[in-house]
Length: 378
Image 1: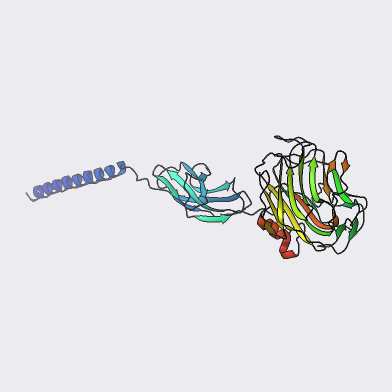
Image 2: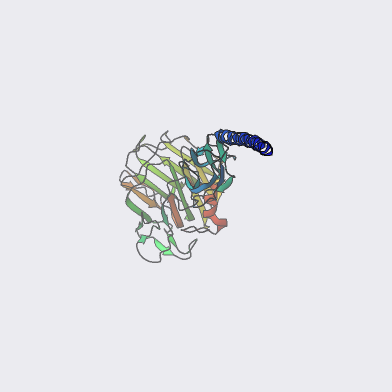
């Protein structure tokens, strides 16, 4: 009888254990069938590197995919902050881990904000925001030719860019001291000048001309400082000429001339005249900037805007082909130089650019009256 009771109790215990095992098994099985919850990925933004005027490198690290496949990753950027994937962005494929991205098409001297991003089916996550500023352009950028005029002997003025060294015509002389180092002396009554023929240039409507001048005789009706001219045809016009000179009252003039054989003071010639006149027998820094239908004049680093631009809005491009650069004399007119248009005095540090110099560039060239010389380290 006792054995019977024990057997019955054992059967009950086994039945209870079986029920418990089944419940546990069902619980575990049902738990395995529940889907994983997909969350946003975890991503951090890499530090900026290799910053240039128009490019930079960043990237990111995706440390957790949030239980979902990474469908897209990269960096996004803007200039206002909190960049999104609706702004400029890169796409560096899929997957977790490290990635690198190159930002392109940036503007010079501009601050950008950058975040790495990672996208899965739950959405897009962003890393922390980092910022950087692209490099600025310098006076080397867009430089066609620059003449230090520091020679002491010889018949050639060396172009520091190697593009257009100038020949000394009618024996102007080297002298010391110039504004910086040596300089060139054209005299006060002769036809001495510097010239390079066979000059070619890119097709632009942005040009800048700069020089230090020391005017000693102002009898000429036009005192030609420097310029570039050609018989080539532009896209929208004819002969090309860009120059700076002093008029009969010693005011600085910058001229942009785009018609072949045309007459000045027509719609095909844009020019601006300063309000101030240049003094004799003192070093003065002058610059003329032609910029897509506008002209700016600078005297000793100061923007002279007293007089308006004549025929402003002339945006036709010019391209020099087989033309000439001249310093100290006017361009050929009907095959001859105009004898009343030579610069009488001295010059130093002359430069020509195919971009529009900014006020900060002019300020650097003037350098508080001390001047700045190629390669423009100041």
